[in-house]
Length: 95
Image (tube, rainbow, N blue to C red; front, top):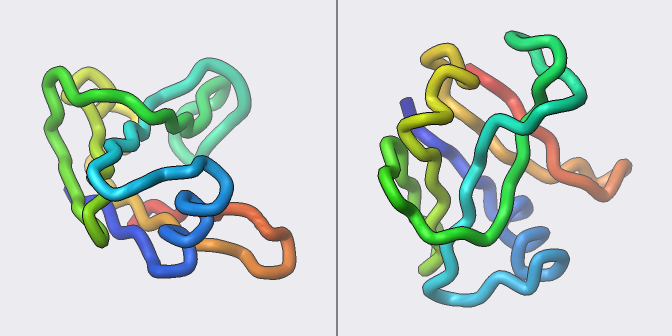
């Protein structure tokens, strides 16, 4: 499994979450909402320090990760994070 962050998505993190060089962003299973695999759960993210990361991706000095406890949420798929210009929000794809 891997995490792919596009340049446009990285810019969103820099602008909207005030992410800076050296920061770490966690993707996790959040109760509520939906996704293609688990009704009642959606993808959450936060600035957080890794405890037991299973998947790590670095992009321009920013570290993105998924903890081992949250791997079930992704069903073995890779996480692709991009930015939708029309909606002005992040979009997620599982490949």
